[in-house]
Each structure stands twice: as structure tokens, then as C-alpha cells.
Image 1 (cartoon, rainbow, N blue to C red):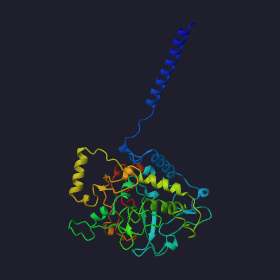
Image 2: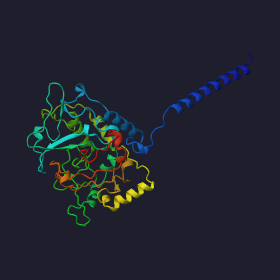
Image 3: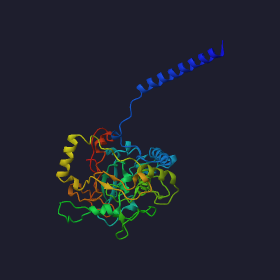
Image 4: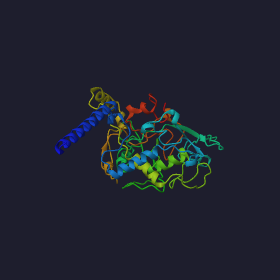
Length: 365
């Protein structure tokens, strides 16, 4: 056989092989379901992260889903075994995953911290007894809030928050509210241009906005939700003694970065006439006075979060919600009937993580 004929046969075989691969890949693509649109998902990173940041985001995502056991630091008293079990798909929690917080009905500091407060750990490893609510303590149920967009809320400046605060309804619009002034943990990195009042700072996280930042929120959740100790929260909630860390500082920081860089929920059908009409009603009846359409971030070491305008539908205030929402429990300087205005973004996707139903307010009623 001539060399030219051999080359021709070889080329024809290669072309046939390539064609077979193309046909196979095409058939596989038809079998693989298309991914959900961005406005149908609550998880996923913000746009603009670099390669190293995406790697840390995914490391934090993996740590967020880790299920702990007794051999990896769980307990001995706990509420859940992983972060993801309470925040399915980074969405709102279900009443089954609710937390119980207990204390007393005033703002003089929780008087039950030496009796297991502020969080009830109602599960225990074998050989240990779970906690019960002490006599005289008030308590409330708290559903896990959604995680998306937390980095934007965390980066709102104090000036921005205070520009909306109105403790005594001075402008006569029927709406009053204040921020929660609370004490940050000693390991927190203070925001640029932090404003202090009697040594306290404006909180952002939690149902009453009593937690300063996502590092404090995350390390506290490890410790109180799962009995997991870290460099930041290294006191056993069972014994009250300082113990060795169960989770590394790197892991905690990765989870914090993951929470900071989860994207903000994408509003669906924004151009739909019914949606527009609903928004007009929402504003006209006064809902928009607390659920502000826009907020702004300040400086941030994470460039995609810095100096951004975003739409959470919240003001980060503590409005007094009246006796119907007064559970007799407080955190920071919040009154028992004051609750942080919850962001409404992503609300339409809540049933995805709530078993097909809506459970609203702080306690899922």
C-alpha cells in the first residue's frame, strides 16, 4: 500500500472517530437536564470573584455542608449536626429546624448565661442530658433565616443605617425604628468608619440584628448550634470551660467568606405588569417605609461587594412590632417586641427550602 493511501485511510479513521465522539456528546447533552436559571436559585457566588476567591468560596461551601459526629467534635449538647441541615439550599428554615432562644424580658443582659443561655441545646450525645428551659426564663422560636446576600448587608455603612433611623417617628410618617447597639466580639474586624454609642456598635446579623458581623455569627453558630469549638468561640456550652478547638480557623474563615460572597437573590419577572402593580400597592400602603427598595455598601476588601447598590427590601432597623410579636425575649438593646426588618428578597423561592409551604415571621407562624 502506498504511503499516500495509508495516510488517507488513517485520516478517514480519525475523522470517523471524531464524528462518533461528537454524536455521543450531542446525545449526552440531550439527556442532561438544563440548569436552573439564576433567578430560580438562591445559592451561587457573586459575580466578579477571582480564581483564588472562587476556590475559597467552594471550600466554604463544602465546610458549610459538613456533617459532624462525636468523633469530629459534635456536642456533647447541640441543636443540629451541620450548617446546611438548617439552611437547606441557603434558603429559609422550616419549623422543624427552628432554634429556641431563652433569657429574660429586659435589655439588662441575659441573666441565664450560666444556665445554658441564650440557646437551648435540646439534643445530646449518649451519656449526656439535653438542656431544658430554666424556671423564670422567657423564650422564643427562631427559624433559620436565608443566607443569600448576607455579604451586602454586612457591608452597609453605619452612616447608611443611621440615615434611616427614627426612634420617635419625628417625621410623622407613622413608622419608627432604631438599630441594635450591641457589643461586638473581641475578634471582630471593625468596619471602616464604625460609629460607637456607649462603647457599642450597630449589629447587622440575626433576627434582632444583635450580632456585629458574619465572623461572630458563624463562630457562635458553630459553638451554640453544634457544640463545635473554634479559636473564636472556645468555651464548651456544656461545661463552661475553655476547650480545644474542634474546627480550624481556616475552615471558619472559609465559611465566613462563603456566606459573604453568596449572591443576592435575583428578582423574578421584574417586567411583569402584575409584579409592577404589586410593587406599587406595596409602596402605596406604606410597606416600603421599612422594607426599603435600595441600600448601599461601603468599602469592602472583597471588590464585588464594595460601593454597590442592592435591593434587599429592608432597612436593618428594629421597628416595634407590637404585642402580637412580643415573645418576651431580647438580644442586645432590642425591646422584646422589636425585630429587625427582614429582607424580603428571595421570598418567592422560600417554599423550595420549606417543604413546599410558606413559614414566615421570625418563628414561622
